[in-house]
Image (cartoon, rainbow over all chains, first blue to last red; front, side):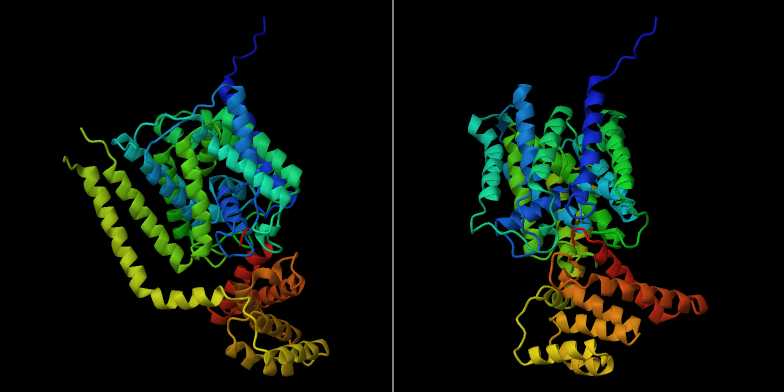
Length: 355
Length: 173
């Protein structure tokens, strides 16, 4: 008698999350988000910081509904599955600064790990140096973990600490809808390029929900495969890539090559270093920028502090001229990358638990 | 405290990074400061004296007096290097004169100062004109390079074209 093969529920959940993220990531760009930036945590954080007037770049100001959706969707998923657990207290200050470094590294490359995958799916070959850098950084991060790097234990905390990030996102949603004077919105530039509100918010909610259920994480997926050969999370990345390629081809967003790629530059060395910084930092604090949002949505106060650090990072990279442009990284960006790498390696050294 | 080989390797890397920071900070500081300043002040209000010149240059370009427009705009562009409009108009003037290499150089300068010239939501948008110049400049440059692969001007033009194509493609820039 024919028997259906046993299906690993975890892998199926991750693959479904990958399919949805890959498809919606391209669809959001098709519907109005900047090209190849349907989902980009670092760009979104810079836009959010701009909307809050934390920096003065008038072209990068918009409260992205996708960010709100990721967190609220994740909170709903965690609550329904009884996984909402409030804990924290593990090296807050280091995690805050790590959030800043994540956005710094992403801004040098011009994209977070998810945008990196979406750019690659759209045929942009300039990301390959960033991919190499990310993998190198992840490997380095795991070296530190293997040699005793430890940020301290997270302990149970009062409920309000875990609710802060979701409540903050609700506040941002209210600000987005009510449009008070103190919230800025770009009229031109990437901040003005946006998908319709309901599509952005709905996509964010769905992605947030699935990401929480599946534990989707770019750096975690690559890292687990490198360290232990575990393909669970990697399967999500692979399906995301496949479906985003298909979506790019179907929607005419695919443009293969190096030249004429949107939101890119040709400084491969600095892309490598920027993403290496993202890789190391992500492994040390337990997840990529997107994963930090999802962890914050399910009650992690530590991740909530990292999210605040990412908002601060968005303000800093724009306000101090650190972010790269199509010309390549600025002088400030190069200095900041080197300083960021120095800092994270020093933290790694200091926070090793030795026998 | 036990110091192992991993500690030593990381410490050496940190020292190397610190040395790199000192090098970049000392060697490139003044040049980088200029570049940063010039590319971040695209929206400075122009001196009232140049507005009539800008308007006159626009009228000249419309009626085909490209050479005269170039002569008028060149001193304005050099006197106000942080303004994008003179460079954008020079790009158009050179393009009308079929000097696509110079046109692309001016468009690049304009875009470095003010990317709104390739933003469809901006009333400054001149993306189609820039695209036309890019197309012609590319064709010319490849033709020249086909005869002389070491032609510096053609290589420089293609470098400018590469930057402008990335700007025209959009994305977060």
